[in-house]
Amino acid sequence: MTQKIIAIDGPAGSGKSTVARALASALGWAFLDTGAMYRAVTCEALDQGVDVNDQRAVAALAASLRLTTLPRVTVNGRDVEEEIRTDRVNAAVSVVAANALVRATMVARQRQWAAEQPLGTVVEGRDTTTVVFPEATLKVFLTASLEERARRRGDEGEASVARRDEADTNRNASPLRQADDALVLDTTGRAVDEVVGEIITCLTNLHSN
Ligand code: DC
Figure 1 (cartoon, rainbow, N blue to C red):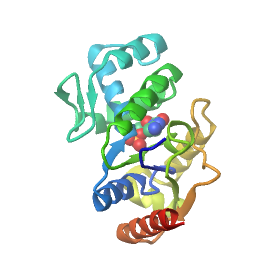
Figure 2 (figure 1 turned 45 degrees about the vertical axis):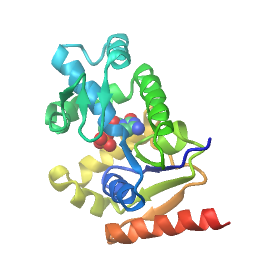
Figure 3 (figure 1 turned 90 degrees about the horizontal axis):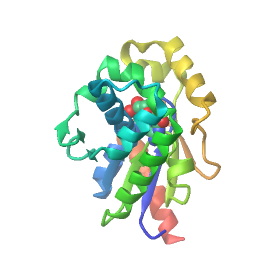
Figure 4 (figure 1 turned 90 degrees about the vertical axis):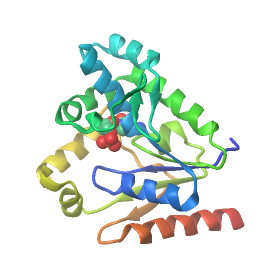
């Protein structure tokens, strides 16, 4: 693989989205939010009245969609940037993300998209370090204390975040798993810039070795 990829994973509230965006901006690289893709498929399934539990129907829909994540999340040309963060999408997205047929389509699109970026891509999401880009230039796994992650999630509460950790870790399709060779960073009590700086230092060291 010749393209440069930094893949970032971690549990809910670990800071992966914020850190990934800031890192892409600091490096001048493209940014890919893979969670937004699963959310966009979910959104379109709900809007078209497709049963999210009907795995084949959702997979067929996922394969046929025109999807963008930048500069805005769109499905078939329709802007869904706000809609993908609504409660009804939050409630259904884990079913869509657990659909192995949908995942196969999304993973292929993610690889294709990254291959087209001229400089490099920072990609964020659940299976990006283990399944999508196991050969990434750098793999980062962010963690933070349960208390801090719950605080970052606002009203969600520690019990709910802990339940989500459990579900994410124990699902069959691409569970939350730390890649063996990932740089593990605990973001508890740390500023975004500091974490970004540490990742860039690590990247620089890779290149000079
Ligand atoms: O990161 P997020 O909350 O936007 O992700 C939305 C859902 O999609 C969540 O259930 C995790 C899942 N997801 C996934 O299974 N694989 C990815 N690469 C990214 C997100």
